[in-house]
Amino acid sequence: MQAKPIFELFDLTGRVALVTGANSGIGAEIADALAEAGAAVVLVARRKAELDQVVKAIESKGGRAAALPCDLTDRAAIDECAKKAPAFFGAPDILVSSAGVNIRRPMLEITGEDWDSTLKLNLDAPFFLAQQLAPAMIAKGWGRIINIASMQSVRAFGNSGPYGASKGGILQLTRAQAEAWSRHGVNTNAIGPGFFATPLTKPVASDPARWQAMADRTMIGRNGELKDLRGTAVFLASRASDYITGQTLFVDGGFSAG
Image 1 (tube, rainbow, N blue to C red):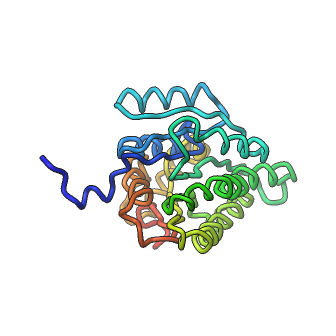
Image 2: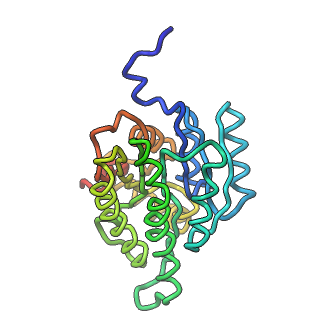
Image 3: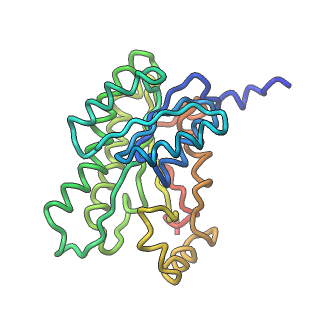
């Protein structure tokens, strides 16, 4: 049976995606979704053993994936990562910046090292990696950049100051990248997840009362499941989003709209 044209808008066959933070959580889920939609995916994170497990999981379902270990807090390593990435499947058409860290301490206890490490991974890496990969996308006349924002891009949560500052920066970085490159066919958008059980949110998710309180504040009545992000990621990575750029789409069960 021939596929209907509407489904072809979401087909990523022939595309190459580079996904950071792809060793676990949101990054791994998005990488798997893009591979299922047809993209070849390059998985980037520090821990190779974990990346290899995600590669095996994708390949077991018939997808194409490769692991590219990289310390994204090191600008020289980011440059090297960008240079190595095309060797696997060709130059990436899609960049998903999902790697992140959240150091939870009261504002008066935040150290300079806490601040620097958070901003380097959460904000610097999405900027510098996109800066390296965008020229090849521009040359092709097509590309997608997807940044991972947060509810803390638009509101404050306690004991999470550096993370909130970095995610507020992601909101504006997304707009700036869109303004710079959309006219060349390279659209930039962000996904703002609500509360999902991931290694990053373990301190909150491991407290049943607090986790339930978060769920109760959503309009849907539950916290997110990783599968809830799959459709949004494929949509923003595909031709279905050709006329959408500079936007942050919150996938949070209505939490931010309440």
